[in-house]
Length: 332
Image 1 (tube, rainbow, N blue to C red):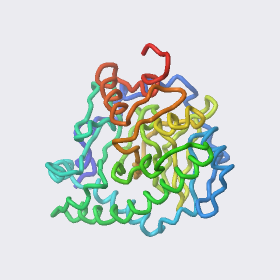
Image 2: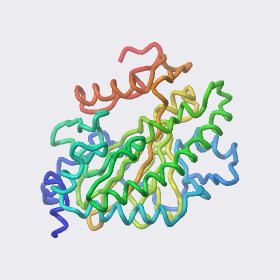
Image 3: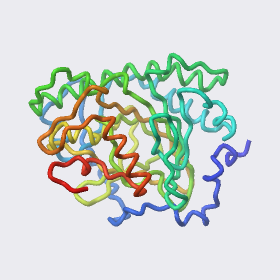
Image 4: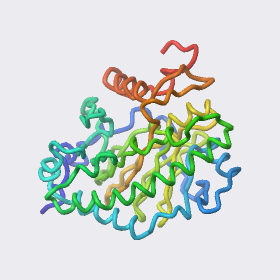
């Protein structure tokens, strides 16, 4: 099969037709700093609370080592993801009909039911992916071998990622001296989801435009060989290098709100390459449905209320407003 046939039709445009696929919010230095690799490193096996606190305050992102996820599992997930994306567009679309797993393209913005929130052709993101709610994986069995294999691997992976998220959040809560009844409810296992992404080749456009995640924590298993993720630090774009057997953790909007802005939600984007595809696998975790975020900076809100407002803004404005909608004494 021609590799082009595996792409969604809207992403099969010739490169010279993609002049509109840009990041409308990108008004900063287009050339990210490459060397040396400045990303803070956090060792989960011997967790240093001071180093973690500094990374969360100054970066909102760090590289995690000694995380306990077998490297064979990380590599198997990458290999199987590549195999899955190489299937024809039609077979991927058909495989996810009436299933908990959603296949999407052109935008990462989805409703809770998995429907893409469209913003017009000028705002296309050069990405396709699968959205996998982990709590529903046991219900999903499919005749497509690659999807069934992915389900089994993700069930194993989810156990590791829930452990990592809980360990990190408990350390952050201790650093912040938060008085929480149940830290596990703020990184609720049942809210965990995985998104697997493929960023096709193109000369112009962005895999994802500048954004912050809405999660408490996002944990990324990125391609070992292809870079693309860039993080904003002190008005400079820095490339997050792909390094084998490491995970990238970035804090999301919920963590920033929980910390009353002491910790930061990392602004980041994804650049695409003209000659090579990129694969990434990201785990997102959120507060439980009954958790009300109470903060000295924001009006009380639940994650569901936050998500509904984000979706409303994307539909109305074409972009996410995010935490600014919930700030105390604001008129957004």
